[in-house]
Length: 300
Image (tube, rainbow, N blue to C red):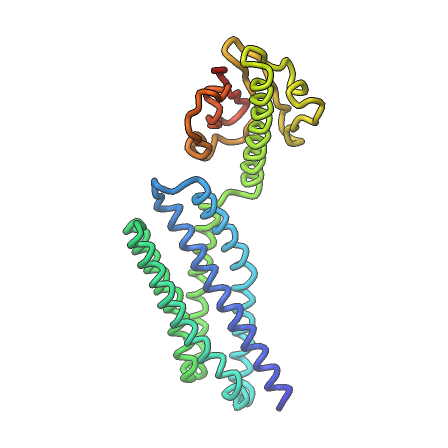
């Protein structure tokens, strides 16, 4: 009996934990998809990128934990229907009521958070869609376990399997939508490499600025090594064409090869107060196009 009690308790606990994780990351996934589906013009690039990262996180977590939840729950239901479930109705039933309590708290807490974001300027369409997701996902799980605590599903195996099938369809459609609104791993890597190149080019430009400040704006370095004083110059990623530096009549060009267009208006991201003492006039413009692209810099 003690062994059965421990087994039932561990299975039920695992089921509850994977349920919490599945629900949480299904909501994360759907909320992030809504944010991408209904864009807000006041959002910064890092917020958009955060939504994309949340979509990828939600997909990864659901792929792992939702099937685990289904397997554990199925095993629990088989035990309950084919073995003496007196033990189950003891300790493990407390976990079910605890789940109902936490589920109710989650609904109320998330609803407060949704209302707060709406009052702070959230788009009405976003708010309504997220509220619908919250009630459907958490409310559906709450209803299932409320009925389960009453023993409703023990004598209705087909209905229980039908409910599980419906949950699986909802999760499956959410994953498909997530893949649709998420870049492929190769695309994500290319975007990261583009961002790395911008970081490198900004560092190169900073060193050129220092050189101009020290030597005067009429004297540009003939090579990048000259501005770095024998320190290593940042190099392009292995599978990208090397950076190039060229002195022009008005200033200089910094060139690199990019896999995509720039994701946002970089002049907003890197904006700083105007200062006529800066040697480079348009130093904060890092918008680029796919392919080989040169940033033309004008000396003040």
